Image (cartoon, rainbow, N blue to C red; front, side, top):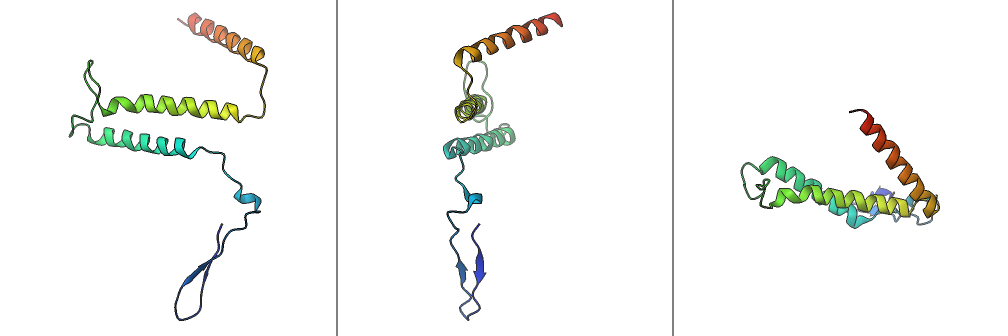
Amino acid sequence: MAEIKADTSHHQSLIVSEPDVSDPKLSKSKRLASLDIFRGLTVSLMILVDNTSGEWPVIGHAPWNGCNLADFVMPFFLFIVGMSIALSLKLSPIKPPKQQAAQTTISHYCFFSSAAGSKS
């Protein structure tokens, strides 16, 4: 973090020292800035739709045969979740073989679908 030092001269200017690049605490983040910005815009859109949809009908949910601004919030979030999962799996240091991953996915699907079916 940059240190801010006050100059004691009469000009009252601030001197900001540049951070040391070799500092391990300041390592480059592995986050995707565009995805974070899109997530923030989507949350802002959700708040806008939630608070003003009664006043502005164009922003509110559309009837069955239409599409308004509020109808884009859920697909945007699903896109963000899908991209986040794909990026986190891509950056994961542990990568199982594809055949093992497919077998695990199929076994989980069979187990959880049979467990959900037995409760009814």
